[in-house]
Length: 431
Ligand code: HAM
Image (cartoon, rainbow, N blue to C red; front, side):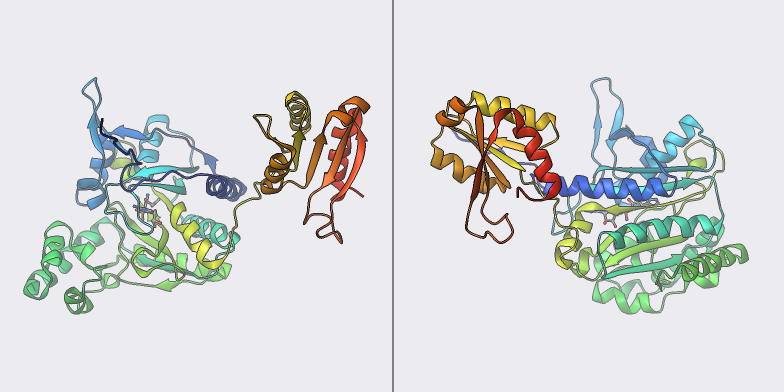
């Protein structure tokens, strides 16, 4: 028999405790921030009809090369979502909620990318979208939400980079000028650069290949192609950010990996991360997307943050540690284990984090497990305690102030022990 070693698929990971608790805490922190700003959660399917994504970006790698596409047994053509903006636009068209519609989300996305540090095939995002307003203050609100949330995690080495891609017509004219510029100089581009030129000249602007850099440096600037309205909009967004004291950099070469952006585009980068994958999030305005999906002309603006990268940035900056996972109490029962079951259930019912051992292990082994659990107290049940109707309550090493190394133990009536633990936990001490 051959032993096949089964592993999580390439580019995916199992996230175990305490990292999983940290992931959840991050999503909860985001939920609080988004709901403070009036966004309601949307939970949408992990897969959609393939057209939802096809219609928004045939020219982007994310849609043309990186989608997990499949047919279900009913022969429907589906795709695992590579992002959620298109899904939310589809949901908007389907449900027609009242405007403005402010929605936040969290969950896994799927892209068939080349895995590397900070880049996965299944990764998590949190994000928010605001449908139904073309007010520049709406752009400011979503950028401020992303910024406030990231800084609330304790991240300091963050850079907000902003640009405007103009309106649809501006963008078309700019694309034309850009194509002409690059085509005239195609010989100077890298082979990959020439390939990108054929697919989407905008994407050449963020090429990091040395051969392309010189050609990119002389490329026309998007500013020269803005309509008056688009220029005015961008000016108002920048003033709004200034008024809030949110620092930003203007980068006229910032383009995004998705095609639906109009006017504002932005990215949040972390200087604590490796340069190649330093974007912790991005977003912008996507007026026209809802109409492309068969809905009315409803504008929208939003962003998504890469949770995995945010957490890597937190690691690098020593921010947002995992929440404490330790038990409050460890029940050590050397009378067979049934007492531990009763006591642990009573404690849990009272909101106390209670752990216990199984398999009738020795006192010494159980005390070791209690130590490892990080519990503050061990509750000991031996034959004497059982006979006297008491439990011995011992404060574990490293917990009691002024008692480093010493363990303080006292007997508490079995009927009082849950109340006593709750009281002691509230006071922060057993004495
Ligand atoms: P995006 O720039 O494609 O935008 O993704 C947003 C963030 O998700 C990235 O900045 C990055 O942190 C993270 N991310 C993307 N791909 C990966 C990956 N393979 N592994 C790990 N993290 C990744 C969007 O998805 C748009 N829907 C954002 C948006 C919302 N625009 C308007 N509204």
